[in-house]
Image (cartoon, rainbow, N blue to C red; front, side, top):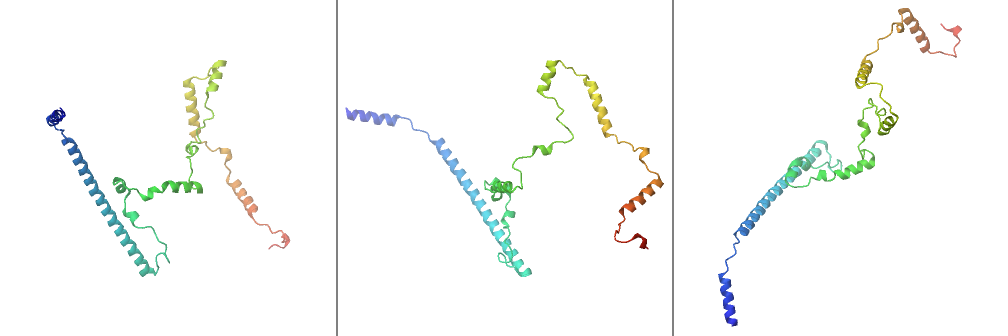
Length: 215
């Protein structure tokens, strides 16, 4: 009986349909192709970085030799070491497109905190600096004033049109320059007398010398 059951099980296994794994195989192949493509891209990025690093090193060496031959200065001993040329050769957009970190932008938050601690940069934006001092807002009404007017039954004395006309008149008067008055202009003789008085006021007085002995 056991032999018959095992034989029946083997026949059932042989009779079961085969599982189709072609879709999984295609997905695995696509993932492997993407990994190979990404690996080749990263290899190209590394080669580019190595080339630029070598170029920056060569530029730094040429600058050091020029300082030595022209001015007789030795870098790091007689002349401070400047920033590497690699910072100018690497562009921020290229680093961002390649998924690399820009070393200059990595320290911006720390630099800002140091500037805030030193008092060079404001921590919060000054909103009052952008306000126009020519537009006062302390005459504007509030909810409490509106409620008081409503309870006491106070009605406005001017209509909207009268208020607009009055505002236009005041604005026009503010822009009109006042004409100088004829009474404030001095004549030629008065101006000469005032000039003489001004010269006498500005003339130095020597209190130690007797005015009778003046030449």
